[in-house]
Image (cartoon, rainbow, N blue to C red):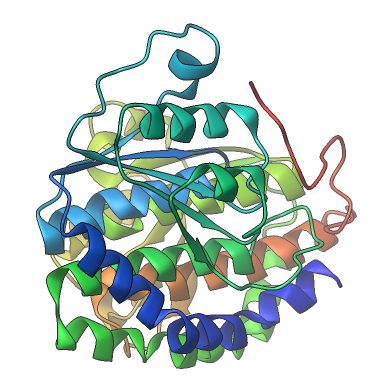
Length: 343
């Protein structure tokens, strides 16, 4: 199974997850109720899914979400107090010992624990009281694609269950179709990738729900195309880093309509007019797309909170084709293995 094939499997994977795991999610929400706070242990792409959880679960469920510092549990052995905290481990493989240490400590302190994983028989799943299997199927490619979007959808489903929101569940049903729509933009994204093949570094901007998208896109470009990429919140970016942008400097932005759109659109205008940046813009707003040297239209089928699933699909396709345009093998990135164990 190639990376390209796994990218294209995502509509099917997401449909299966939404159809088959709703009862599991709702049963979990009913059994444990809405937690006062959540601590998430994750690494790599799963860490970016946790960033998405911070926004979604905060916005719709009023739950403060923090990312764990696993070395406190595994190396320093100075564990925080986890009372009244739901401890979630998010991992494609479920094998990293430092994540396992966080869930084991959660259980030892009597906290509820949940594993969100693609491996329901993994050590992480065995350490948790409950398991949410994202059911992405075997992911052979080193770079996470379908497992990442599966994690995002699992988080969205948890939010809908805790909110008991029929509207959110209805919006979730539109995700597979929106992702399929983005896959139809592959020829456009391949052309953009070839035009950016000389690029050696870039900046990626996102805010709100798509702050996670900026980080995940950055990770994909780094691990596959070997670029030096820096993700930023569009707000943080204006507090100094914008100074690096000069004529033709590549800036990629994820800018769907929503709460953060106006500020991001103003920043893109400034980058284009004052800094003469070379812009790739992923958006469902035509005026924003018109400012891009490489505009990528979103379908407009999804509300802002679900656009990360469609936007990252564009990023995956672009990165795949950029990697090939640079003469690298997207299925065998150097120095990496599928399962990474950290302590």
